[in-house]
Image (cartoon, rainbow, N blue to C red):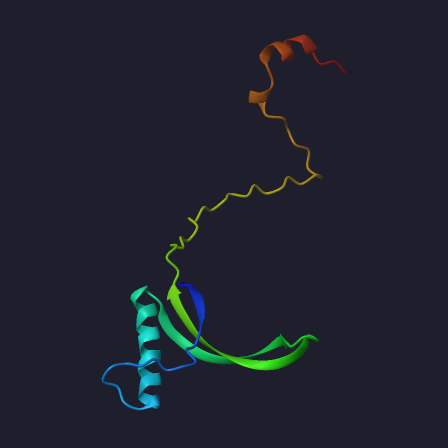
Length: 122
């Protein structure tokens, strides 16, 4: 499963003067194209543009005014590789039934310990 990381930059507000490009709309389009191409050279893919409201304080009294910012959003696939965890089936032992008498393992008891207990009597 691929995951992405995102980068947001402010969209240009003014068109740059570009030699050979006439008209403000064509200059702005070329300016925007240059910004997108500069980001794609670093591996970022243009994803979308958003216009979001921002409250900004202005003046001496600190009066807030709403302003809209245009943002360009870029994304690229995460470089970190995601590795699926290895499948390790764990064997779960069935819990012993407490109602059944469990005999101790003979391997756990030393033979010297058995000899010291003595013979069984009735």
